[in-house]
Image (cartoon, rainbow, N blue to C red):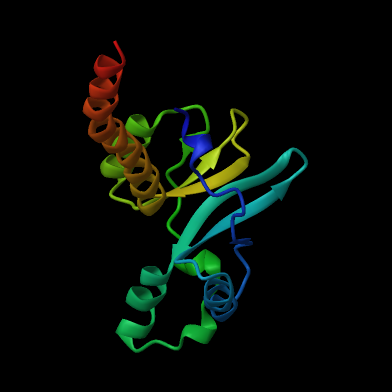
Length: 151
Protein backbone atom coordinates (compact mmCIF):
# COMPACT_ATOMS: atom_id res chain seq x y z
CA UNK A 1 0.00 0.00 0.00
CA UNK A 2 1.46 3.39 -0.92
CA UNK A 3 1.96 5.84 1.93
CA UNK A 4 -0.31 8.29 0.09
CA UNK A 5 -3.25 6.17 1.25
CA UNK A 6 -2.68 6.79 4.95
CA UNK A 7 -1.11 10.26 5.09
CA UNK A 8 -2.88 13.45 6.12
CA UNK A 9 -3.61 15.65 3.10
CA UNK A 10 -4.62 18.68 5.17
CA UNK A 11 -1.09 19.79 6.02
CA UNK A 12 -0.59 22.74 8.35
CA UNK A 13 2.14 24.84 6.80
CA UNK A 14 3.83 28.21 6.91
CA UNK A 15 6.74 30.03 5.31
CA UNK A 16 10.18 30.48 6.86
CA UNK A 17 9.47 34.10 7.87
CA UNK A 18 6.49 33.17 10.06
CA UNK A 19 7.11 34.20 13.70
CA UNK A 20 7.48 31.15 15.93
CA UNK A 21 4.62 32.43 18.10
CA UNK A 22 2.36 32.18 15.04
CA UNK A 23 3.69 28.67 14.34
CA UNK A 24 2.75 27.64 17.89
CA UNK A 25 -0.69 29.23 17.41
CA UNK A 26 -1.16 27.18 14.22
CA UNK A 27 -0.26 24.04 16.14
CA UNK A 28 -2.75 24.88 18.86
CA UNK A 29 -5.56 25.85 16.48
CA UNK A 30 -5.18 22.72 14.33
CA UNK A 31 -4.25 20.33 17.18
CA UNK A 32 -1.01 19.22 15.53
CA UNK A 33 2.55 18.78 16.74
CA UNK A 34 4.30 19.87 13.54
CA UNK A 35 4.10 22.54 10.87
CA UNK A 36 5.73 22.06 7.48
CA UNK A 37 7.74 25.07 6.30
CA UNK A 38 7.25 25.59 2.57
CA UNK A 39 8.42 27.78 -0.28
CA UNK A 40 5.75 28.67 -2.81
CA UNK A 41 6.90 27.88 -6.32
CA UNK A 42 5.04 27.93 -9.65
CA UNK A 43 4.56 24.16 -9.62
CA UNK A 44 3.42 24.08 -5.96
CA UNK A 45 4.62 24.18 -2.36
CA UNK A 46 8.09 22.79 -1.79
CA UNK A 47 8.80 21.58 1.77
CA UNK A 48 12.02 23.18 3.01
CA UNK A 49 11.76 22.35 6.70
CA UNK A 50 9.58 21.22 9.55
CA UNK A 51 8.98 22.75 12.99
CA UNK A 52 7.74 20.53 15.79
CA UNK A 53 6.38 21.47 19.18
CA UNK A 54 9.51 19.86 20.61
CA UNK A 55 11.73 22.13 18.48
CA UNK A 56 10.05 25.19 19.97
CA UNK A 57 10.46 23.95 23.53
CA UNK A 58 14.06 22.71 23.17
CA UNK A 59 15.38 25.59 21.05
CA UNK A 60 13.82 28.51 22.90
CA UNK A 61 11.89 27.90 26.10
CA UNK A 62 14.36 25.40 27.58
CA UNK A 63 17.19 27.87 26.98
CA UNK A 64 15.28 30.76 28.54
CA UNK A 65 15.37 32.59 25.21
CA UNK A 66 12.66 34.99 24.11
CA UNK A 67 10.64 32.87 21.67
CA UNK A 68 9.11 35.98 20.08
CA UNK A 69 12.37 36.81 18.28
CA UNK A 70 12.49 33.53 16.36
CA UNK A 71 10.92 32.59 13.04
CA UNK A 72 9.98 29.21 11.62
CA UNK A 73 13.19 29.40 9.59
CA UNK A 74 15.22 29.72 12.79
CA UNK A 75 13.58 26.67 14.38
CA UNK A 76 12.98 24.35 11.45
CA UNK A 77 14.82 21.13 10.79
CA UNK A 78 16.31 21.55 7.35
CA UNK A 79 16.81 19.94 4.98
CA UNK A 80 13.64 18.07 5.79
CA UNK A 81 13.49 14.31 5.27
CA UNK A 82 10.65 13.44 2.91
CA UNK A 83 9.08 10.33 1.46
CA UNK A 84 7.62 9.90 -2.03
CA UNK A 85 3.86 9.37 -2.16
CA UNK A 86 4.35 6.04 -3.99
CA UNK A 87 6.62 4.48 -1.38
CA UNK A 88 5.19 1.79 0.82
CA UNK A 89 4.66 1.74 4.54
CA UNK A 90 7.76 -0.36 5.25
CA UNK A 91 9.97 1.99 3.21
CA UNK A 92 8.44 4.98 4.98
CA UNK A 93 9.12 3.44 8.38
CA UNK A 94 12.69 2.74 7.30
CA UNK A 95 13.11 6.40 6.31
CA UNK A 96 11.63 7.53 9.63
CA UNK A 97 13.98 5.28 11.54
CA UNK A 98 17.01 6.32 9.48
CA UNK A 99 16.27 10.02 10.05
CA UNK A 100 15.03 9.50 13.63
CA UNK A 101 11.75 11.32 13.04
CA UNK A 102 8.10 10.58 13.78
CA UNK A 103 6.65 12.80 11.05
CA UNK A 104 7.55 13.15 7.38
CA UNK A 105 6.23 15.30 4.59
CA UNK A 106 4.99 13.18 1.69
CA UNK A 107 5.97 14.57 -1.70
CA UNK A 108 5.03 14.01 -5.32
CA UNK A 109 7.61 12.94 -7.91
CA UNK A 110 8.37 16.63 -8.61
CA UNK A 111 9.09 17.30 -4.93
CA UNK A 112 5.93 19.29 -4.22
CA UNK A 113 4.07 18.72 -0.97
CA UNK A 114 1.38 16.04 -1.10
CA UNK A 115 0.71 15.33 2.57
CA UNK A 116 2.20 14.56 5.96
CA UNK A 117 2.52 11.15 7.58
CA UNK A 118 3.18 10.47 11.23
CA UNK A 119 4.09 7.33 13.11
CA UNK A 120 0.66 7.64 14.75
CA UNK A 121 -1.03 7.55 11.32
CA UNK A 122 0.79 4.35 10.47
CA UNK A 123 0.05 2.72 13.84
CA UNK A 124 -3.62 3.62 13.48
CA UNK A 125 -3.82 2.16 9.97
CA UNK A 126 -1.94 -1.01 10.96
CA UNK A 127 -4.13 -1.53 14.04
CA UNK A 128 -7.23 -1.27 11.84
CA UNK A 129 -5.79 -3.86 9.45
CA UNK A 130 -4.82 -6.15 12.34
CA UNK A 131 -8.33 -5.83 13.74
CA UNK A 132 -9.77 -6.94 10.40
CA UNK A 133 -7.35 -9.87 10.32
CA UNK A 134 -8.21 -10.81 13.90
CA UNK A 135 -11.91 -10.79 13.01
CA UNK A 136 -11.24 -13.14 10.12
CA UNK A 137 -9.23 -15.51 12.31
CA UNK A 138 -11.90 -15.55 15.02
CA UNK A 139 -14.83 -15.98 12.61
CA UNK A 140 -13.24 -18.58 10.32
CA UNK A 141 -13.71 -21.65 12.57
CA UNK A 142 -17.34 -20.72 13.23
CA UNK A 143 -18.02 -20.24 9.50
CA UNK A 144 -16.33 -23.54 8.70
CA UNK A 145 -18.35 -25.32 11.38
CA UNK A 146 -21.62 -23.96 9.96
CA UNK A 147 -20.63 -24.98 6.43
CA UNK A 148 -19.94 -28.54 7.56
CA UNK A 149 -23.29 -28.79 9.35
CA UNK A 150 -25.08 -27.69 6.18
CA UNK A 151 -23.58 -30.64 4.27
